[in-house]
Length: 205
Image 1 (cartoon, rainbow, N blue to C red):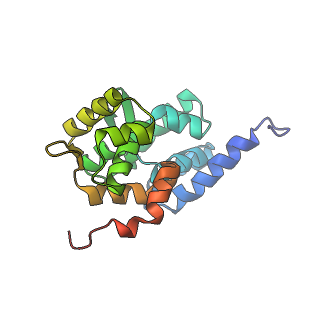
Image 2: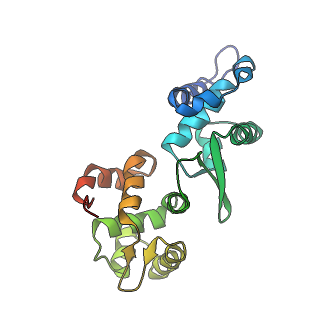
């Protein structure tokens, strides 16, 4: 829906919602005064706010979820990188983005896989039940055994999974904390896990 001035109200509402988060972020201090003068501040603050709730999102997801144009998204991401507000990292074919200086290499790697449906489902199932087998995973996620094997190999290579004696999540508390903190961006299974996270965290680990 557009108003008489030709502005898409749906896009404006989305930008304002995430811009409020971005403006409240410590990174807001990095915004340029000129951005407000050129009408760019809402989009830029929206990207910062969006990445605070959806770290590890790739370029297309940021563009589509915020209803920005491709060139517009490229421009703001590049400027935010230059300002030191966000970081870009390569994850296979994807360019992913996170708030600057917040995640270590393992956490960035983990976020990339948590943004993929099947690997995320595998990690969640294994956190819920460490005794879960490859066959159990295939059944629970409604995927083939070769699909489970493929992603298990990738997760092992990435340092997120051990296959020495069955399947075991590496640094499970770190993985769990990432899921809990950003559960709303990972879907229903993550939200269910987050609701009962205190049962899985080993405070003496």
